[in-house]
Every structure is written in C-alpha cells, then in structure tokens.
Image 1 (cartoon, rainbow, N blue to C red):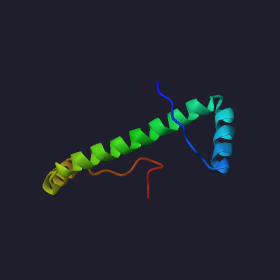
Image 2 (spheres, rainbow, N blue to C red):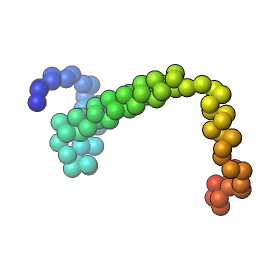
Image 3 (tube, one colour):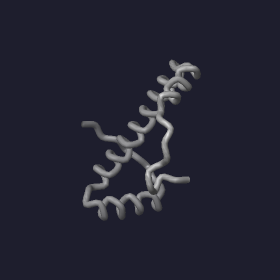
Length: 78
C-alpha cells in the first residue's frame, strides 16, 4: 500500500469526515472506496464506448426486430 498526501478544502474534508463517520468507516477507507468507484465508472464508460465503436447501426435494427410486440407490464406504462 502506498501513501498519498492530499490537500482538500476544509469544507470537503468536513463533509468526508461526516459521511465516513455515518458510514462507519475511516476517512482513508471512504476516500479509497470513492476513488475506486470513480475509476470503475470511468473504465466502464471507456469499455462501453469501445464496444459501441465496433457496432453497426443495421445490427441494432435486427436485434430490435426480434423483440416481441406486447403490452407493457403493469407499472411500466408511459
């Protein structure tokens, strides 16, 4: 594990401290988890963009054509 020196505005530090306490974790654990979630979100976005570049619009239409036409389930109406 490595150490990182981080400068934060007092207001953000205060919020982190409050949320970490509420969640029952240390500030370090909270920040580590938050950074991990952000990295995961960015990597997922990159992955989806990469997959989208490999697709063809015609294929999308073929997939949609396979979806059965039926009434929406109760609660799913527009």
